[in-house]
Length: 491
Image 1 (cartoon, one colour):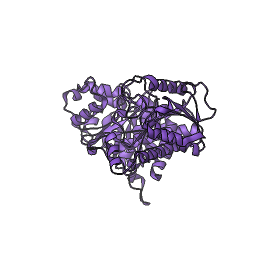
Image 2 (tube, rainbow, N blue to C red; image 1 turned 180 degrees about the vertical axis):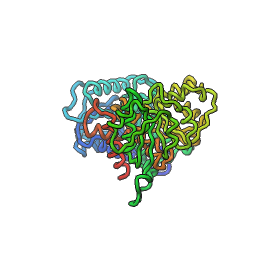
Image 3 (cartoon, one colour; image 1 turned 120 degrees about the vertical axis):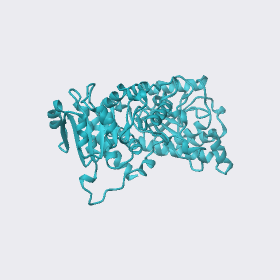
Image 4 (cartoon, one colour; image 1 turned 90 degrees about the vertical axis):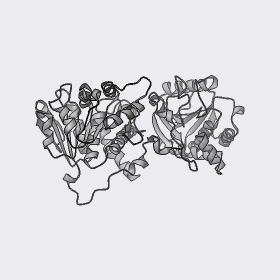
């Protein structure tokens, strides 16, 4: 980023113009995230990261926010450009000591982390450590939300960096925002493009951050007026067992909500009556005695695994390996795959395209079964080696999910909300993905789109309800398939 900024300045783009653009972009993020003005407390360092925060503060004041500044260093130590931006605020903002106990009344309460940017490194010390500590205390005890400018202060060098609810990174996303341990500090992740800033070298091989703009280019064509249900995707779900019927129901309902033309849920005989009575009437429920029976049905894509339990129906391994159709492999189907000998022998040959969607526990079992775990290697590199060895597409689900496929950059998802940390979200995602693939979307694109839509649905549910704790997967599902997809298509 320093090199790109230097090149932009050499080409005639001033540092101040870049800072003004960053501040405007940050203000747009806040307006979208928190539409109603409230109180903003700016924790500022002394460099350009603080200058970006000061420009943002000016825009917030104009939008009706009450803004308070808390400087980590004495004002005379500010870098010249940051000092100029602070002076431009004048008396429009109030000031308080770094660790002052009183906070202006009002909601929402937004904390802005403008302490350290890309110039910081190593453990937090002195004034920077005090600022981050004060921000931590206010976030926890005042139930505030935090916006990190460019990156959370201390990330990558300190054991206790800023815990951001949203990080708005400037120009290009920085690699360490995606480290295995970073997601708790980074939170929701957005990138703010800066006009006049060039692209990093070797971009073709670099990982990408999934954005709405990028996803819009991947959307399937709008359906013709003459389209019928058989052309909207013949979706199959093989799921459910005694005690785990909810997973099957969620997956099938999600598939129908995402627009599957004909959705069929295949389940064991002993749970057929429960699922036939509880699934939406649009879902066809068929009992089977063997997984291989599914191979006889005309389907465009098949989702396998939600709620199958530790003793799935016979024939699962053969189905996974032989079926010619695209398949989304999740949950208990992944565990069955990890329990078999094929990964360790490295002789898995698939009948058709396969998208594996493990959560961290399932991923650990797959890697262990394949004998490919390496200390300190990191999930991203493990995932790349796995897909190249076994010829699959992989969606590694976590707080910062990513999709990886041989010959493609990893696509990292930035959307989401902590209320997603509850049962059922993965089952919903399997239903979404199976429909998208059945409608003709390639596995890599479907995985990126489905992950983003579910995460954005959680954000929109939170905005609509205002709740942190409540948020069933079924409620988030409706927002994801409805409002999130509508928002995406509308631009």
